[in-house]
Image (cartoon, rainbow, N blue to C red; front, side, top):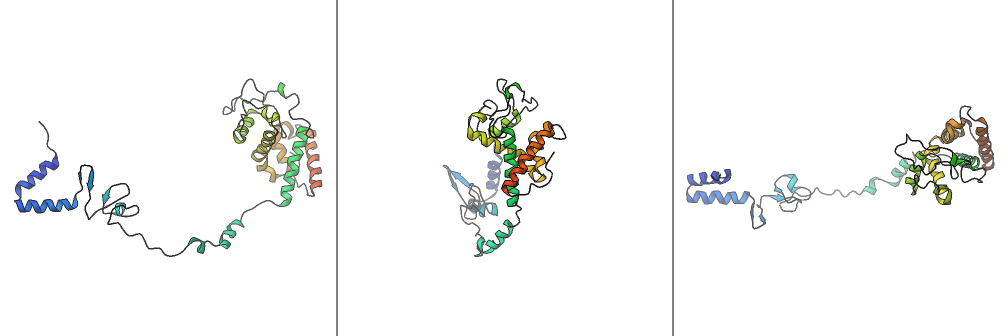
Length: 258
C-alpha cells in the first residue's frame, strides 16, 4: 500500500472541513508565506529576504550581511571616521620605539666572533673540508628525522665546518640543496658553503651570543672543547676573537671561555 505524506493528508483533511471560499482564502495566505519550487524556479514571499547562500527567512542570518533578496536589513550607518585619523604616525612610532635592538658594539662583537670561529675552523680560510674528515663517523642514527645516506659523509665542510646529519639535513632544507644525499655541495659550491655557515650561526650560535664569546664556543664544539676538554683550542679561538675586537675598536666583553 502506498503511504501518503503527512502534508498531503493534512491538507486534504483541512480542505474537507472548509467551504470553497474559505479554502481560497487559506491557500492565498499560504501562498504569501510558503516557498514553492516550480520548474526549477524558486518563488519567494514578499515578506522574506534571502541570504547569499540561497536560503530565505526573516532573521538577520538571511536579511543581514550578504542579503541578496529584499527586504534586507539596512547596513549600520558609517561614522565618517578613518583609521589614519586614529592610528597616527606618533602612535605607530611609539610601538616601534619599544623594540630592543643591539648596539653597534654588539654587532661588532658578533662580527668578530663569527670570523674568529671561521678563522679557527678553516685555518685562515685554507681548508674547505675537515682534515681526515672522511675517516670519521658523523652519523647520528638517533636523529631519525634526518636519516644518513650510507654512501655519504657528514664531516666538517665550509667556513663553519658544518658537521653531522642533523645539521646537513635542516640546512639543506632551509637553503635549497640536498644536504643528506649531496653534503659535498657545501664544499663545492661557494655560495652554498657560506650560506650554510650563516644558517648554522643564526640558528645555533646567535641565540646565545649575548652570554659572551665562551657561549659561542660551546654552541659550536661543546663537549670537544669546553669544560677542560681542549683548553688549547678554546684559547686559540679567544685569541682570534680578542684580536678582531681590537681591530674593530670594541671591547670583547666578559665570559670569553667555556
